[in-house]
Each structure stands twice: as structure tokens, then as C-alpha cells.
Length: 69
Image (cartoon, rainbow, N blue to C red):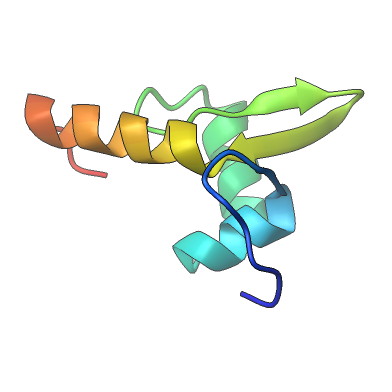
């Protein structure tokens, strides 16, 4: 990823897609399908943002519950 992102920073859809090695379209599909196993996101003035900190919390909780992420 070209930008250094701290855990408490909000990432753009492109940054987060790069972090996960998926396309922004995949993230959009997960959101559109209201996939219960999709990473948490925020709407900020009409733009989608992801928190690396919230993603790590979500991933840890998902693994604890035995959900494939």
C-alpha cells in the first residue's frame, strides 16, 4: 500500500481494497449485499471509509466466533 495508515486512521475504499488484496468492486458488492461477514465501514459525507482499528477488532471477533473472513 502506498500510503502509511495508522490503526486509528480512516482508509478510503481504494486503500482498504489494496490492504485486503481485493478490488474496490468486491467491497462494494459486500456492502450492497449486506453481507454479514463483510468488514465494518462508515459513510463520511457520501464517501465510504474503513477503519483499520475496527477491521482488526471485527476480524478478531469473527475468528473467535468461527466465522470465515
